[in-house]
Amino acid sequence: MNDLDMDFLVGSDDDGDRSGRKSRASSGRRGRRRRRRRNRGGFLAPMLAVIVLLGGIGAAGFYGYRWVNDAITPDDYTGRGTGEVVVEIKDGQSATEIAQTLEEKGVVKSARAFTDAVAQAGKSSSLQPGEYTMRKQMAAAEAVKLLDPEKRLLERVTLKEGLRLNDTLKRLAEATGKPLREFQQAAKKTRDLDLPSYAGGKLEGYAFPATYDITPKMTATDILSLMVDRFQQTASKDDLQAKAKRLGRTPHEIMTIASIVQAESGSIDDMGKVARVIYNRLENKPALDGATPRLLQMDSTVMYGLNKYGISATHKDLESTSPYNTYKYEGLPPGPIANPGDHAIQAALNPTKGGWIWFVTTDPKRGITKFTASESEFFKLKAEFERNRAAGG
Picture (cartoon, helix red, strand yellow):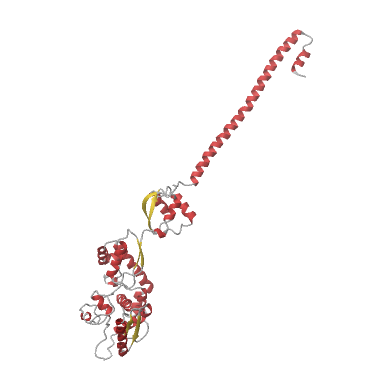
C-alpha cells in the first residue's frame, strides 16, 4: 500500500479530516523529497573528498618519484663533448677527487655521474696519474674511456746503459722537444737533483739508464731528478754503500768501476770477469817483468777524457794528459765515464773470481771477449782482434 492509499483510507469519514490529512500528506512528501536530496548530497561530498585526496596523493607521488629519481640518477651530459681541455690526475688521487676535478673543469656535469660511470666500468683502481686530453661537456662514460693510461700525454724515453751524460742529455732533448741547453744547465745545478753526497756534485754515472714516462709539465730538472731517484732506488736495493765498504772502496769508486765495466763489456756474461780484471790491476800488482807498477790501462777511460768514441785508443790518444788517461796515471780515473746499468753495478760489487789480468774483445761485431792471465796469450788475442777488424768484423 502506498502513501496515497493510506491517506485515502484514514480520511474517509470526514472531509475536513481528509483535507487536513491531504495537506499533511503533501507536506510529508515534500519533506521526504528534501531528505532524499540531502541524502544524495551527503553521499557525493565524501566521494568528492576521496577523489580530491586521491588526486593529491597521485600528484605528490608523481613529483615525489621525480625527486627521488633525480636524487638517484645524477646529472650527466650526453655525447662525446666538444673542444679540448688538458686534465691532470695527480698521484694518490681517489676516483672521487678526480671526479671533482673533472666537474670543475667542465668535463662532466656532476662528480656523481663520473664516479658511477667508473664503478660501472670497473675501473676505479685502474686510474693512473698523468695528463690527459679531455673534451668539455662529455657523458661521464665517455670521460672514463679517455682516462685510459695508454692515452696519457707523455713521452716514453728509453735511455741505454752506458750512455755518457752528454749523450743522455741530447737524447732527452730530442725526445721531449725541450732545448738541449735547459738540460745542460739543469745537469750543472746538481744541488737541485738530490744527488748522493758521495757523487761529489757530478751527475755523470748517476743519471740511471731506464725507460721513463715524461709528461709535458716536467722541467729538465724534474726529469734529471727522476733519474737520480731511480739510481737511489737501485743503490738501496743493491746495498751499495755497505758492499762497497766491504770491498774497501767508496760508493763513488764502485760507480766508477761499474761505468768502466759497462763500457768495456761485450755482454752481460762478461761483466763479472771484466770487473775482476779491474780489481786485479787496482791491487797494484807489479807487471810481469817485476819492474813497473800495474796500471789500469783501459782504452774506454782514455777515449772519455778526449771526448772520443771507439773501442781502441791510438798511440797518439795514449799521450793525452787527461786525468782519465789510465795508461799514464795509476788507479781509477776521477769518476764514472758513463751511466752504468744495474748489471754493471752488480758486477762491480760481486766480481767473478779469477786471476785474469787482460781481456780483448776479439770479435766486436759478435761481442766476443776473451780473458787471460798470460801476457803471451794477451798478444795472441790482440792479433786476433786486428785480423777481425781488418776483415770488417
